[in-house]
Every structure is written in C-alpha cells, then in structure tokens.
Image (tube, rainbow, N blue to C red; front, top):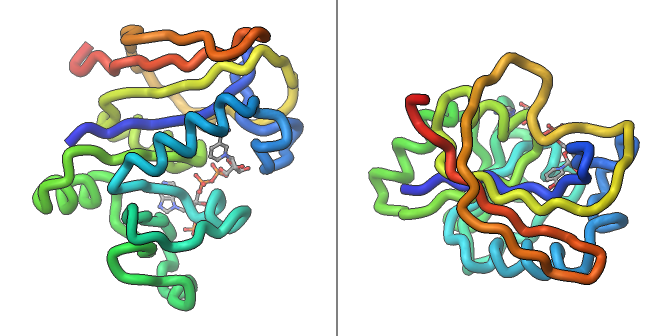
Length: 176
Ligand SMILES: NC(=O)c1ccc[n+]([C@@H]2O[C@H](COP(=O)([O-])OP(=O)(O)OC[C@H]3O[C@@H](n4cnc5c(N)ncnc54)[C@H](OP(=O)(O)O)[C@@H]3O)[C@@H](O)[C@H]2O)c1
C-alpha cells in the first residue's frame, strides 16, 4: 500500500495564511480542481481531527475517510461505517490494518500534526506538494517543528497556470 501525503503550500512553506484555516481563500483554482480529482480517486483518506473540525467532510460511498482523534467517541454523531470513521489508532496500526484489508493507496491530507506523525514513523512513500507562487511569512508549515531527516527525490513537476502554480510529486528515499 502506497502512502501519499498531499498539501498545498506557498514558496515559503506555509499551508495556512497567517493562521487562517481556509486554504481555498488563497489556493489556485487549478490546485482545487487537482485536489478534488485526487480525493475522488482515493478509496482511503486519512485526516486529523483539527482539519476535520474546521471543515467537516460529508460521508461519501466513493471513499473511506478516517479521522484520527484521541477521543473518537466524541465524533459518534458523524460516523457512517465504511465512509466516515473516527479512530485513535497509531499511524503504524492504521497502516497495518488497511494494508491487510488489501487497500493499495492511502492518502494523508493533513493537517501538519497528522502528516508529521506519518513522517516520523517512516510510513510515507510519496509527497504530493502544490507550490503556489506566494509568500505569507506567517502561518503553519506542512510539518510541525520537530527534528526530522527525510530525503526525497523528485518524480514529476507540472506547471498548471500562467502564474506558475506547480504540482510536484516526490518519492521518499527509504533507509537513507
Ligand atoms: N494547505 C493544506 O494543504 C492543508 C491541508 C490540511 C490542513 N491544513 C490546515 O492545517 C490546520 C490543521 O492542522 P493541525 O496540524 O493543527 O491538525 P491536524 O493534523 O488536522 O489534527 C491534529 C489532531 O489530530 C488528533 N490526532 C489523533 N491522532 C494523531 C496522531 N497520530 N498524530 C497527530 N494528531 C493526531 C489530535 O487531536 P485530538 O486527539 O484532540 O482529536 C491532534 O490535535 C488547519 O488550519 C487546516 O486548514 C492545510
């Protein structure tokens, strides 16, 4: 099972503008279309509770969305088995469970705390990063501040508009 982390970021690595959680206010239309397509094509999606709290995603039979929270019971009212589930499993346990179920791809859509825990445990195979030609100075990064040492190799890069929004894909070099 391939584990893919996906984010949209500015050139200075910010995934929020000055802390405002609404990414759609500044990400390009091209990125939003790409993200929707990526989402629709992913049978299994992982998200942190803070990202869900900001924009509670509606359940869909097209994908299985797992929201990670240390208090999954408090989200019971949202739960639709097989479509929208809440879990306090560790990234390692979660990965083992879905790998055993035969899923071939897991999309981790953030936020930074959840993405960092997947990077920390060396679970990530690819990083799909949209680079928007903007600088915000203040705002969150797509990993939280802790010591990581991850090497990646560019797989592909695509310029999708005149301003130069870039869709990049990187492979994580394991055991480097
Ligand atoms: N630009 C982008 O592409 C993009 C993408 C996604 C999100 N965002 C932004 O990111 C922000 C939210 O990110 P965030 O980092 O604060 O939160 P997050 O990663 O979405 O969620 C973190 C929360 O998930 C729960 N959790 C459960 N298991 C965890 C684990 N193993 N590792 C980490 N957290 C775990 C914890 O909450 P409880 O246990 O208390 O429930 C934790 O506080 C929002 O502003 C959102 O707009 C941007």
